[in-house]
Amino acid sequence: MSIRRELVKGTVWTAVGRYSHYLFQIVVSAILARLLEPSDFGVVSMVLVYTGFVDLLAEFGISATVVQKRYLDRTGLSTVFWLAGFIAVLLTGISILLSPAIEAFFSFDGLRLVVQVMSLNLLLVGLGTVPQGLMQQRLAFKQLAILEIVTTILGGVIGIVFAFQGWGYWALIVQTLSVRLSRVIGLCLYTRWLPLLTIQVLSLIHI
Image (cartoon, one colour):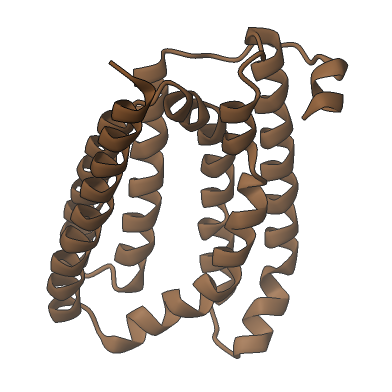
């Protein structure tokens, strides 16, 4: 099969995954809107103002690096993984330290803990960058699309269950973490890739 045909299929599957994700997310959000108070969504929105931006820093273009640098062997990939992990841990620590200031800025008691818990997303981003890059490198867009759909549904169901149990805005937080965690697990299971406990300085230079 030609590369062009593979890319066309990849584009189609990417669109299927993305729009299916939006569709299921709309359904889940509609259900949660009936179970939760508007203020619950407001709490999470306040935190997302910060974490949404930091998530981009945590990814740091690592997945794109894995796709482009096809010559990276397992040692090189492990080096990239530990670099992504270091960045994720660093940003998580900074977020935890900044959580009191964020709470004070929004004048909402308890927001500090929400920021600290949501910061776990940054660690999950770091864990998933290399496996996701490997799947993109292998043009496994169909598997990525299926994974996106499955994790969206799974996270939505978990969020709805927590909302039924009266967890309030924590249901939304658990939903977000569940989607990211299940995605990382799915990426690792598909690629069957684990990092070596080593760092190659030369790989860092060529990133």
